[in-house]
Length: 137
Image (cartoon, rainbow, N blue to C red; front, side, top):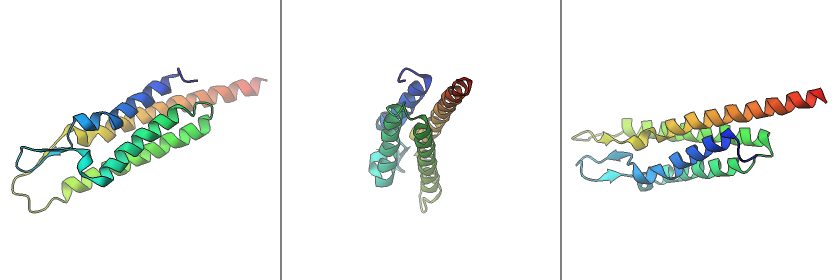
């Protein structure tokens, strides 16, 4: 059903990946005046929006808990790839005179992963509950 706790967790993950990247910059460029958002890099844009879309799709698959669980894991992997991309970007900047400041946008995938893990834990709990009831019949 749609009123379960995993729906709340998935909505929070959607908000983190679909809304907050427009508010919080990933970093501030070397001059310190212009913030760099996720829309400046195509790969970041695709991964952020893909994760947000996957969270919304997962919410509406409440009748198929197995597939919902698989999509949750896929979304976690997508966020780990995004996190790895951020680490690569931050470590591969060469020839920079002054170091750029990292923004809170770099940590958004971590927060999303936490809520996706909580959602998957709740989905697994529901699946175990349904299996235990089926055993009693």
